[in-house]
Amino acid sequence: PKGAYYVLADISNVKGNNSKEKAMEILDRTGVACVPGQAFYSNDKGEKIARFCFAKRDSILFEAAERLKSLAL
Image (cartoon, rainbow, N blue to C red; front, side, top):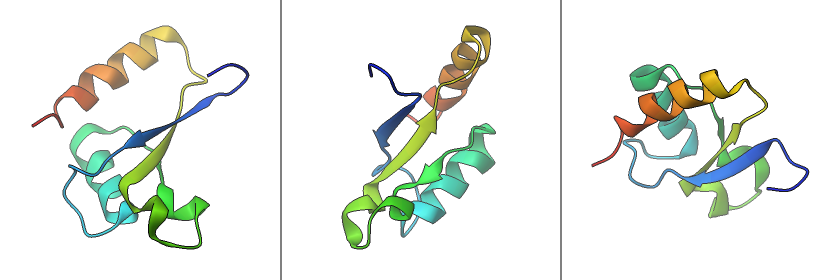
């Protein structure tokens, strides 16, 4: 995104009952941290998304992407 350091991603296929549990599952399985979508919404719209920050060096982002690929079904 232009002018941003974050991206919202669909995490609906990750194990967990809500976005916080899904974010913890991502962290536990990959070592990549994200912010649960529920932190940004007062209703259930955030339960299937997470916010990832990409204000990192390219080498770190490439490593995170490789780790996140392991979540693919």
